[in-house]
Image (tube, rainbow, N blue to C red; front, side, top):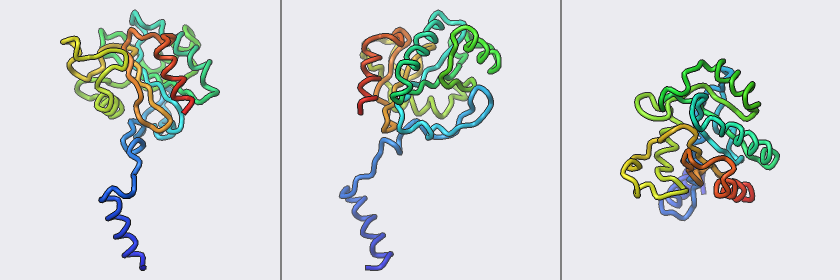
Length: 198
């Protein structure tokens, strides 16, 4: 069998469903380049194989103390493969007005944040970052509640600061948690632990 025949057979097998093509990594939101808070660029694909928590953060929000809980979570599980990615956003009550340098200084001085922080992004609306487009399209509902139970939860948009998306080692989203779910919430911690065990 020549190379051309082999290629045709393989293509037919894939189209017929006889050969599985892993879709989790292909559809993963961990794709594309983003800018870290220090200005360096990183490819989100570098985080594949880890358990990832992506959270939109703000320094002037009632939920801002969650930085401390996120840092504690990171300290507890980082050696087991957990990474936390903080994305500052200013869409909700203009609660993140600072520059990247100001945000970095705030996080370091007030909460001793050592998990990865990124340059400010838009998490909804015009100019929404590709990462957040992927997150909300792939996880339109919260893990901790039925969104359709409340009229204000009919869209997949991020609703407020400190929403958390949990991504497994396979690159697929395994959970979405509302602002009210704090980093030490048992359901959230158990979801992380379950992904770390996989």
